[in-house]
Image (cartoon, rainbow, N blue to C red; front, side, top):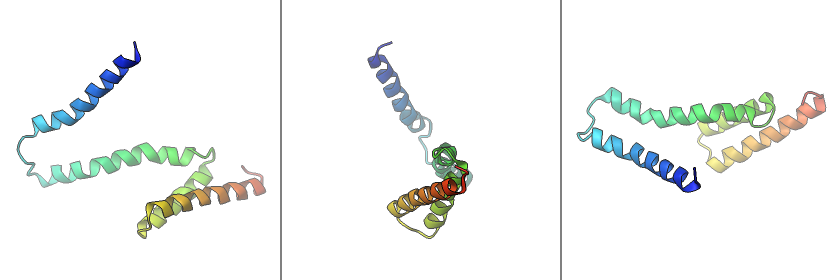
Length: 105
């Protein structure tokens, strides 16, 4: 297959994902349960995709967990995204350094 075929298939898939809900649900959704379910689906999908990556991206689960803990605490207290990202990166560096000193990592 050529690259253009791949691009066309992905464009069609992306278009259908956006088109089908508009054609299926013509009336406003009145169910509170369905509205709340649809509200939280993007957050749940994002969490399911990123959580394993956070723990395994550094090559050491301990440093990944330390970054996750720092990120959750700072996000809970309403810090900005750049602050959370930089602090988590610093947590990984410090944890990796401490693990190397201890001979673990």
